[in-house]
Length: 599
Image (cartoon, rainbow, N blue to C red; front, side, top):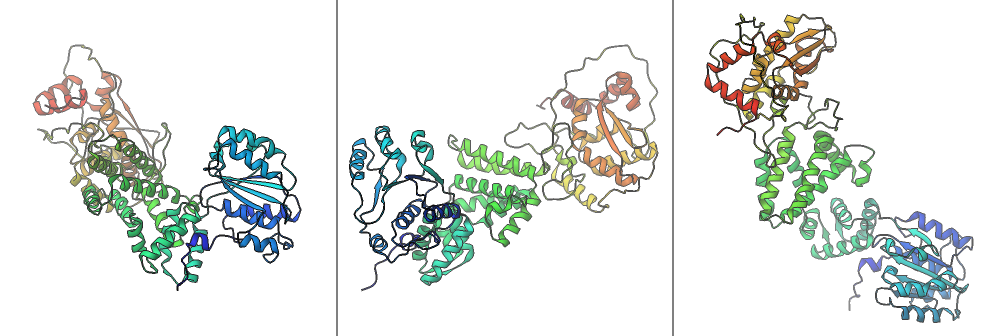
């Protein structure tokens, strides 16, 4: 007849302080109290489930009743008291479950038993599990005995919810806080048990079990037994994923990689694949949230050990985290958490998840900086993908409208009637006398997002890749004319598909101050907002073309009509006449100025 099966959580339960894994501080303190004969009358062991609270209580009870303890503070295991304890026939150790014995009458019965001294051994030890389940009346009945029990009585209380214990109980006990067991400790224990039981395992599968256990050794052993039975003694990574019904982290790597490549279509296809496999949309979002949280920890070497990953896995996480950037991870986590918040009340749950994934793709396209700057600072960090700032941000300055934001109108593309000089300064037109009419200026509107077509973004990327990577450090002097030529060249090369920004560049003449400061007064607030969003790209281009790394750009809105004429070389009336000559141009500008939506 085969030997009866015993679950690993019971078969390999710690029976000594040395085998109590992950709680070295607690073990050392209890051992020293035994060696120094400073045993207290009441202890409270608190912590998460499955971390060794009851096991530590049993080990301590066995050690303080041992007739000949070892020099290390451990029980000898050979005396009559130790043998009786191991055979579960000891009359000195009593275990109670407060979940089922939680009334005042149960505590009064316990108090009566306490008055009887032990017949064998030195102490009577009462281990009360889930002590937070005691009623208020039971706690009150227990107070006096807990504070002044007979000298031969030791109470050990165990709980997973310390906050539910009355302060009067806490003040009468020595409190020991048990911590979650690290994943690497759980993996080593599972590997040891697998070797003893002749079970073939993959280290990556054990890491998955340890993460699923969330710091509890009992949970890890229970999962290990279930998977070992399911796989006939061969615990592989793929079968473990199948048994636990969780997603492989490779799927989350694919999600994030698609987001960084602005490929929302691939993410929608991947989402559909997972839904067809039976995964709930909420489970997918929760897993992606946890994955991004892990990336946020992996971005810094100080927080990377908190994940308790193997060396190979930690390197993969760190590389992807550096590619994404801290700023993107902050914003992405916020959107995912908002999706989880709205998921319960949503009538279109799949659509909500799909829109969230697309909004993450749009977020990556905007080029979120790796660190969140203060309002007075200008972002200088690289965008998602780890590359340096490129004129691609001209498109990123006007990102595609996300599902949660209103869609801004796209200006009508207009071909000007006259040729536009690209490399020289436009000469001022002869001014025509006009009546002195005050033009009312509306309050500054909110920034207007003008999307750039995807093809234009790709063209900017190709042109930028063919240029040198860094501006010169020589500090070469240049003239105002050279700067204005570079300004116009930038508009001609990188803003071909953005009519609004081309018009903003064409309408002004930048001025040079203090040899390296470029000052530009835009005509209206929408132009200021649009140029501000691509400021980094413009500055980098000017520095590279003019071979001077000290160039700075200052953008503001012109305050008076005279200043508009000085910047543009055209009076407001002439500009109006020029715009009115082409009704489409006039309508396009009015849409931008008044923030209208075309009909």
